[in-house]
Image (cartoon, rainbow, N blue to C red; front, side, top):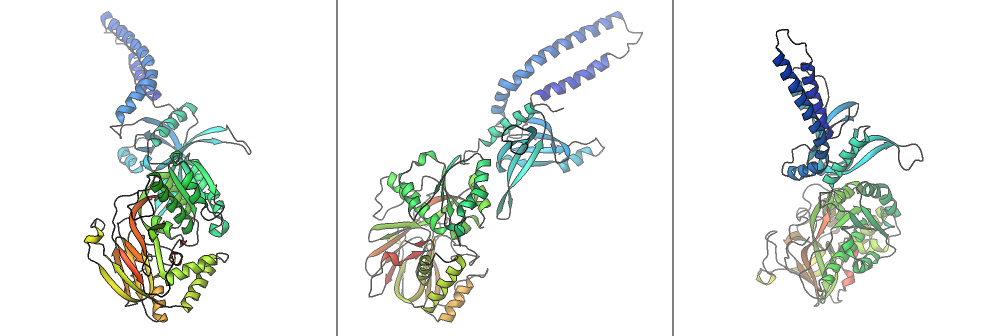
Length: 548
């Protein structure tokens, strides 16, 4: 009943030959002559010889000819590779395998409207959405190997809105030979997707996610990696800078990507390590203004923090399973990154930076990490609002005319703003989170080659609180409540602290597993001159990933 794709040729031939034999054994009319009888015998003998030749050539088609046929059928993706009968659900189905999809149709008695009914009931799954195929067996409790064969199972990555979830399709068949042929054929097709990783370096921050990040990895991430036959080299970080020190020295040639399980601070550290390693391998001098090279490997982000701004901006959703399936499927998303320097010395790479209210709030929250995340954020916000004060600054910047703007900074037209500012933010990504559904910088994009400079001028505390509340709205948050608030798209900038330069160069240097890739370098500049008696140290400037 269940035959392999190559044996199905014999089945069809046997069925057609049995019909010929059935016709040949019908009673001969008494009017027939001896000559007609001899012709019938001769025809029967020739038919038997043809059957013998077919029985010899059919197995050859399963070996050499089958391989040749597959190479030819690469140019014909709709040509069937295999066909068989499987039980899906409670019904038997006619299943067809091609280079691009698996199609199944329920087997039912013929009716006058059979063609129309079959077309309506036909279902399929695209193999580009399948990330694993496994042999399905029934095992008793405690049994690790063997078991009763039930068939094969396809694991599909199914999308619903922004969510990705795993969906299993069971093809039940008790024939071991039949399942083996289908399993090998499907494995061969899935191995042809070169963009999917096979080996990953994983960094887990154990104190993230209420100290449950490692358990989150074991429960939701590791099983999917194992299902997709991905080897994971896991490192549990023990201190700040642990992942950075490993990325500086380890051999990256053994991996197809790097995965970070943690919050925004962990992601920023791993991204900084990947980009710094790329500059070191190329012999670049990082303590100078330069055009950074792209990271050698893509970065996968598994959200396991308190806000997960980077993960939400990249994936659009804060969900570990969705992020894991993006990594498994090999989805890549270019992401804009900035380089932060002071007095000619590289501080780090990052996604955003804040000065004033935002910087002080993040710094205060960082010093109280012993508190629960929600309480820590509220405490830092209220205390900083109580001590709200403006800073006397001079902003000089060149606006970006678009993602393809490649004009040199010296050729651009400088704009200068001087005055008191409560907060200055530079965002290379939208910075989405639960508190800001549209992001802290809704006007910027992940990889448009520009960033947003958000400068909030001096105003009353009540008006500034209204401005902050605006971020929780799904409508336009900025340039509405506070007249002194201004959003300017720029392509890169330099911050000057009482004389010395603090350069922050915007580059597109990372590719993330939707995961960081360098497409272009836009070296536009912004000068931030702080009119203060006391010189601002680099440690006083903060990003959304924590202090530098």
